Image 1 (cartoon, rainbow, N blue to C red):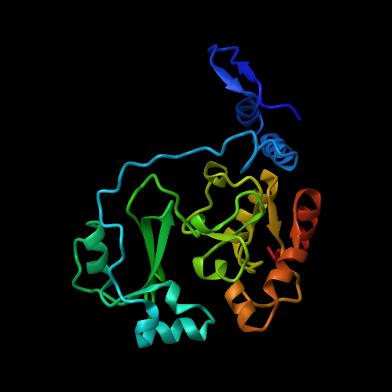
Image 2: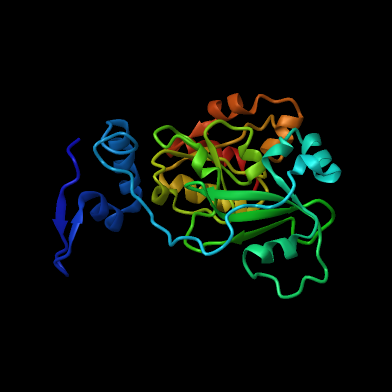
Length: 272
């Protein structure tokens, strides 16, 4: 496949690449085009097409988390260890709101504060946000705070190979069990913007959840690959599957689909 060529818009005369033209004309066809170029070595890391660079303003906030590791606190260490998670990868905040306000003024009222596990979000080794995970009963299990609104709301982006399939989970904890994986800390986003050409989306195993069913359907329609869990698995998410003793990596690799096959498997899996 030849390198991208330039086209001119008939209406405005603006110049655009073939990739940009296809993305404007037909997003599904554009994804297929990008994937074909990826397979042929004409896009992605260490190839003739350079990975896009996104420059953010120099952070005007503290970039270091000055908190104890989650492994140093009995409640956070106990919770994470029981879930087979590594407590040294996260932090513990006794007063979550007050801690966040030291990085970015976010909460006006800190009277009713609570302890939370801190999940750091990094991009190019800069702290660009964090998630706070509740340890006790809470109306909001996760609270996401971005220190830079233009930064990617993604966990693990600095630790992946973008020239290989990148697995995308719903939560940071789940991503730690999967090779070359990231997690979306919010709604699904356009990961193409961050240099990921071959995403594999992994949603929770909730076939009766209307929102998850909708998101899986949209992912299939976009042309991306998606994991459709086999009906023999009852666990809701990756962490639960690990707790049940499943080899989750093998299950995922054996149940990744795209296109028509994904639609057929999806129609069998969903319960609504």
